[in-house]
Length: 456
Ligand code: F0G
Image (tube, rainbow, N blue to C red; front, side):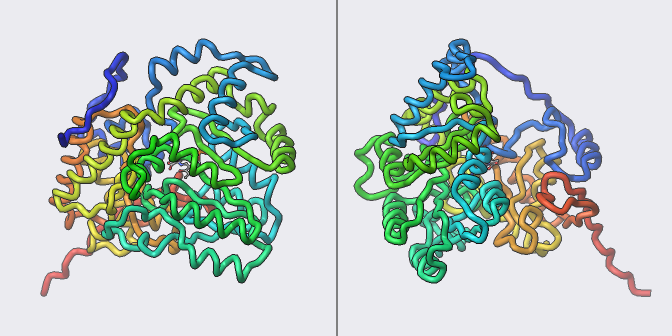
């Protein structure tokens, strides 16, 4: 069967206001065409991010009531710690209010100024925390990742020869190797178990700690089960455990595969690093048994971590992303292949070949999708990364357990409508922007087409 089956039914609904094209046109002008500035109420389908935007289950809502709000030694923390240890096998687990807080604690506890961190692709907050510690980050994605149209099963992999080369030349300046699963900034592509094994082995040879950015660990493990030879008979939980067994630690944003709206974790094996991390955690996030979260948040995460490994949930999750990607592909829309786990990425340079990167094709497409159907997406390209952008993508990130197949069909129709009149889309220029992270707040304006000069 081709229709993804949502393995849940709806118990409670949240109305979506239907907006008119005129309202959306006005809203776009008011927010200077920056979709981050839109009131969410004026968005009909919100695919800005899959982070913290999921729906909790009845079990999670019930668990909230069990939340133990004790400052120290909370029973909720003990339950979460036991669940996280069971899934990851890491002896030391610390809570944090979200992924970037875990990254901050790790960077403060581990890195020295002048050190280098090697990755398949660092997420932007991870890179920012590395740089805030005086270190720098280097991305070493595998070669297949460079071609958006190439069909390959594990385009999230790290380039192993580049990793060895960097370790040989930089020697003990390398402070950390971290692999992001799935590779969000590289198109939500999975990393293979073989690649993780090889990275772990190389890092061990050079005595460099190897960590996993585990935001989407369950989606990655599901891809391994489906795509890697010899893995189909194993449970996703078993594969996930092997991923974690290879690492010296992990950072985790529970806003993704923790199935909660807020929360994060840091997992460690080294007792000395744990001691330094505890000190950094207490300073930044709070005591080691709550880490910036309420007891009820810890409960919900503990239930979410178990639910995310449910085979029915994961099949629906990955199939529904693939379903949207296939619809777009069939309509001729250039999408990054194969489809990622949490999002479909449209190749805006191929979609709008008449717009050079300096006219922000991703921004143009994202604004138009909002105008056409009230669909909010996210530019990942020249606006976000400036001239360092490798590509201009528009990410349609799917919140977990929120939208139905008919919502996805609506999104596909919206994109197809815009695709049919793609040559009419205009480029944009930035009229105002802050120094850092400009995509969140920059002002844009459309570049008016230069009218053809009429012969006298
Ligand atoms: N690592 C990865 C791979 C991420 O995708 C994110 C967040 C983080 C770390 C930071 O986690 O938001 O809990 O602090 N990604 C979101 C996104 C924001 O839209 O892709 P956080």
